[in-house]
Image 1 (cartoon, rainbow, N blue to C red):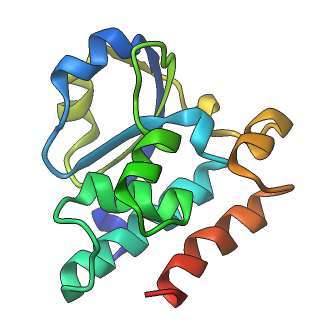
Image 2 (image 1 turned 45 degrees about the vertical axis):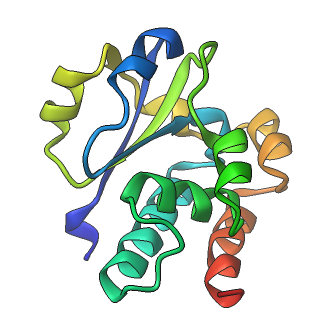
Length: 144
């Protein structure tokens, strides 16, 4: 299943990205809501599995990824914490499409370093290390 999902980071302007969203089979979120690359990948894989099994809370890959990323069943909360806003400058992207297709559609520059762990991101996500973010993702599945 891993080969179905590709994750990457990017930089750009939320005000320019927002008009291009949503993209099919692609989640574009605020990279500050992503503790580490494994966090985004885990959320994307859990979301894809839930959608394929008919157990998803939402109807779209994008929203389902954000629910797992934040560890909540509430779409509004997930969008507030992980959604792209006008002032967003760094993006975490999970997609089922070829990366080139996403990059040619969005006005962003690929920069995977925005997905790396930082203490600031850990505080925003509410975890002390990357492994705790993975537990946050898994906990949503347990609460379904």
